[in-house]
Length: 454
Image (cartoon, rainbow, N blue to C red; front, side, top):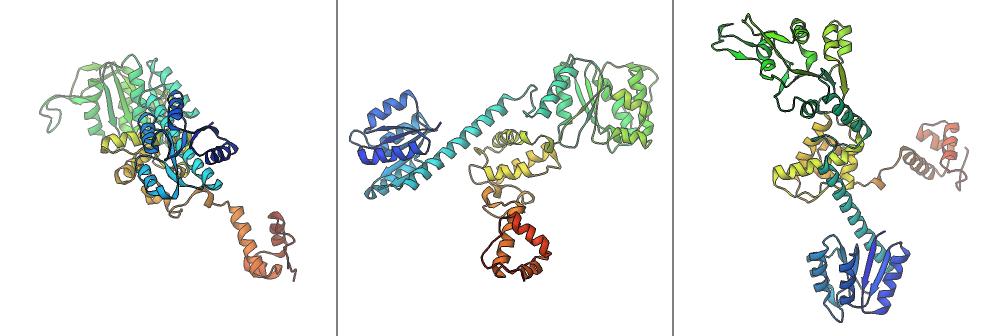
């Protein structure tokens, strides 16, 4: 429950404000002077303080400065007479949330308390999310409390302890390299090399040279011996990304490596033994490629000892707030900024967006917003236009109506314009009389004065 202190030496004003706030559901304590309040405040801070600037023992501005210096999260609302409005304005500059002029209206007191409580709630939610993000998950580098990600974490921890090949199936931007790195770091090979190679877009000759290495003079331009990536990862882990793009002829050679655990450098005659772990990753359906004859079935089963399918961001939307705060903190550090959170409206846009680029796209969006915003909190206007193109400037959730509500209001408007002539209204709405009557009954528009069946 939100705790509120009311400090005012005028008994009538003090009791009135306290009564209104108590009736609104707040836990309220009232004080007639500043010293007794400060003693109580030091024991257990209040969430919101209604503070009169004119007190018999201490100045209100002095109390405000003390509150913001010792309990910066407490929101202070100044209460003042008409003659001290300038002082109240100065107090807001010193950190007060806002001010009210006497005599205070009940509505204004409740509204000011609600706004201060909402600010406190958002601040605490931001702090909680930042804490969760900084604490991380079971695996360093990963952010996510969703069931989908918790299951992935458990699988990674288990498979890291087993020296087997792993196949990662995931859309672009979901963290394939991060997952492979986690398997490596949590396993017995963590002190050896982790090597990454993207198989997409290379010829067989280039893949052979990169993975297997070559001897001096093996081909034109081979002026020195080159150690391949597989050999250089001795004792460690090799991530073969986009494995579905590898040419069929190269698949035969890779299968041989997995079976024999040895290679020959291009142009070489002596085999080189390998002690490595292979993790393959793909954003394609390898089973379907096998059916189409584009991927060897025997190689598929060699790679697919354990399969980990990483969920897309649309499958773990509950992790978006955590990720957003993590990326804000990361962008703050990179751009030397101090963005302190995100507005509910901006977060709502992100929660509804499809994220075809997954987590990588979300990070890019937050980097864009943090880099360009001039405020202290990200708003819908800071987000890329593709996210806010369906929403007007300054929209809020209350303005977004359901389709049923839109239809109800439009039918009611047409009925009003046609003086509730069902035939005329149906002609405008392009509805049969029966369909229109069903809608009228559905939305409780039956019996409107002046209804006509003609």
